[in-house]
Length: 80
Image: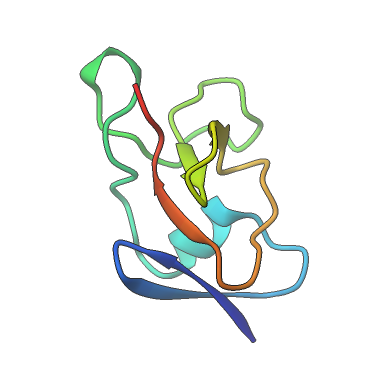
């Protein structure tokens, strides 16, 4: 099984799994600050609410629920 890193914690994932699903399975509920100073979290699962925005390897914010997990990636809260 592959893994990526969230706050220095290795998160395991299965092939084809999204970042949000892997984090949910690992019982990570807090995705950092979301829009409007709300807590980021996995909510709708289709990218509509944008509550799960994260940055992958320092890139622009993406929806964790739509983004496939990548081996050894560093995932951090999305920038606002």
